[in-house]
Length: 268
Image 1 (tube, rainbow, N blue to C red):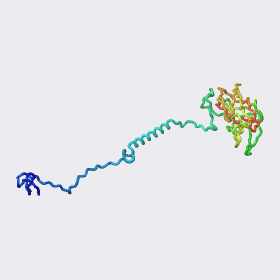
Image 2: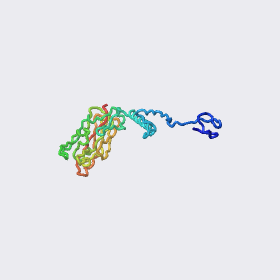
Image 3: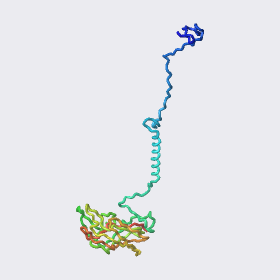
Image 4: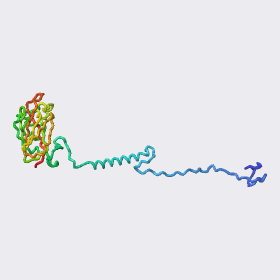
């Protein structure tokens, strides 16, 4: 039942009040069982496989860009390395390598230069007798040791070798670029260093077929010491021991040794 809003008279069914005749608004009711409207939910497309989604929990948005830059940097570095490397460049190994002098004069095309020491035949004034190493192995001091490229072997003569002349005969005319020698006994025998225990050659004079000579002053160092030759063609080389030191201060051995000789040039 409802009441009239104008006079308060209880009303039955009808559109007008039975007491005062005023129109009566129809009663409205709410259906409690009506289903609430749910908001629409849009589907979310998954990120492509292998590509981290920007803003996803645990993956910062800048990370994909950083990874991309790192890949580009690695590729650029690999390309630069491959362009800068020279597969035809000769390797250097230190021991046994030949270092050609920069001031070799006009001694032929630098590409033709080589170590011609092994083609020479040595002639020496005197040779010390054989001995034995600390381990008891036999040791000789033949002239062939001058040309073997091994500083642990040597030619040596007894006493003071000042003024001694060594001769090296080449197979034919050779244009030399540099000459050199190891000016003592460079062998290290276990705990014993034989270089300071023998005499050392302090200066030499090189001679060639045309009569020219070249003086070389040497330092006390058991390594190969070379000097450039200025455009000389010769079939033989003489090596005069101009100055020799006193015997070694420690357990001094009265011998004059030369461990190696080096001749760099090209056949003319």
